Image 1: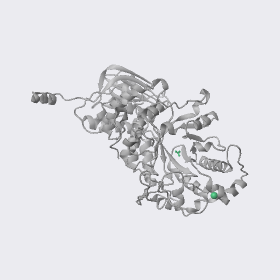
Image 2: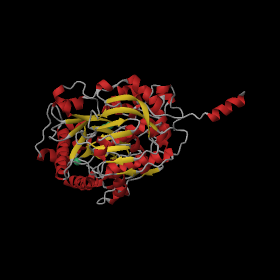
Image 3: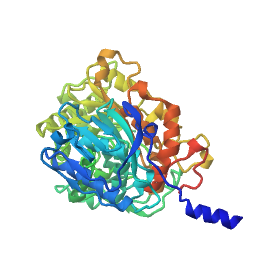
Image 4: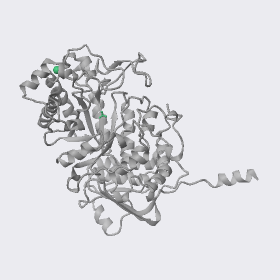
Length: 555
Ligand code: ACM
Ligand code: ZN
């Protein structure tokens, strides 16, 4: 009998079928399931010749993956007159058409049993259509290996989609722990799968400087190393293992290009005037006392910051930012501004002389030193404007006088973003309460890998309302939402991915979906079904609290 079951099991392979529209994350604006399916494996792929080269590259990546997985080659062609032939009802295969009527990042998908028609008007629109198509295919598509037990079909459906917010960010701290370019590419891949479009690259901090600056070679010879790292949560400890790394300008360009091909703009952060101890270890004249300084081996907020009283500090900042501005093509450079203690500035003769020279006075709201930081922010903002760049800063930049044109990242709650929006200043919501992915995912800390504290579950991320407490006429100043992944307590790729996923999927619905399209029940079903399988095939580690599994095994 047992033998008979075995024979039947061998004769009846378990086929994986097409995905379902309820499984798409982030949920599309409008989606209607139709009867039937379209055979995608081996389908011809045709693309409007008027699209940009980047669109063809994205389609080629998709067709390569489909060809590998299905074992049937899908050729991509760009025939003249494609649009007319589709309009006259003669389209066959998978067809990509440029549609000037569609807004940026929007797309439509129309799949019948004969033809799958995809329309968009820009690179990101096509990229997101392709990500949706991938989610409609069996999850094995993420494995990128030949799989004969799969029916490479797409469900017939009509989808019209576009994002709620233009800024859909994810941050990564590469200072506290250094992540290789391959690790960053894998991070960008999963961001792209869920339609995020900004990578906030935290490149400098007290514990290590990570970007090559040609004018200051000691940044990548001294400042990128620290003499050991504290162990676990013990602030008095040091493992005495020299730790470091940096990205060459060539590697930076490689990451920018890789991200751009996936619809992601990279925003570099050079955190100033605080969080600069590593740079000061290489160039001690940057500090108020002249050092000596050492890149920090422990976590926290250093009181040693850039001296705002010396012109040489501004020359350094401007030279560094000139190279940064010419490397990164995006419109924004993040200049940090967070957690800058003023103890050194209060004692420093040069900083105090600067305060007098500028006629700065403390007032009932802010100290003279806070106004001095505001002066630093304005000066850097004006300099970057000459390079065609705008600044983003953490919400401390609201302390003092913020010049028009700056964008505020609201991290100490939502109030910074609310205040900014009400003053007509653009803001991005990234409060610790919902979007600090270094916070624990479970209250049962004993069965979790190290986390910084706090508790941010998938449900908490999902529940966020970015415009809460903001009058309708000011809401357009909320450009979007971002989550931050600080890596003090995260050393391995496995741990990093565990902290990121599946919270990133919840973030994507906050960023993408209109409030009426959010539904936590549907989201959890989609994530624990299709989502987890897709992540398994793509080789990611993820937290499984949604299915009652703790993080005991994560190292
Ligand atoms: C921050 O978490 N210090 C922005
Ligand atoms: Zn000083």
